[in-house]
Length: 195
Ligand SMILES: Cc1cc2nc3c(=O)[nH]c(=O)nc-3n(C[C@H](O)[C@H](O)[C@H](O)COP(=O)(O)O)c2cc1C
Image 1 (cartoon, rainbow, N blue to C red):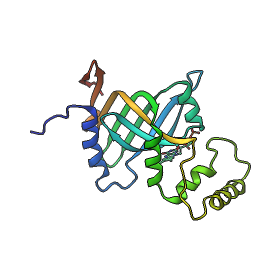
Image 2: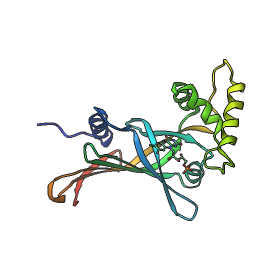
Image 3: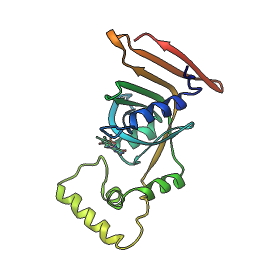
């Protein structure tokens, strides 16, 4: 019999590996929910590019709407759904900025067009026209012509440190399986939930 994972991150790694094998869509995509100063939620998709025992990492513009919301209230929720497995994963917890060196490291891996786009985009702010954006791209291309594109100071990663992680797996007759992991003092508790 297969041994149960010892931590939710180990269970996530095994589940993600199944999702990534022959995935028809990017399996790193997840919905990220944050709240504003009035506790009103907002939700958008992000790519969770890295994960390990410490938590889940995603990258964005720190001056975006999500960045402002996370600065004011550093807690968030992530939800993945992989239709080809009929599996959902939910993670909730505190969010912190990654060290600059780790954001530099990830930024350096990105295609050059993405790097230039990070400089050109004032993410979440009003854009007067498509032309205005393209003009900014041309200006950034000229600035970095022939050279390495450094990471913009306002762009980088976050780490969501999970407090709760739930795995939902579809089963017949809507009798789905739900396994909830909750962080305890120095460990994790795992329990089943009614579907
Ligand atoms: C599949 C998918 C993946 C996305 N991944 C990211 C991402 O990793 N980082 C990011 O900043 N925006 C990503 N976006 C765009 C966001 O959903 C969102 O439009 C943007 O970050 C601005 O959100 P905000 O105004 O709430 O800050 C993605 C969109 C989609 C549809």
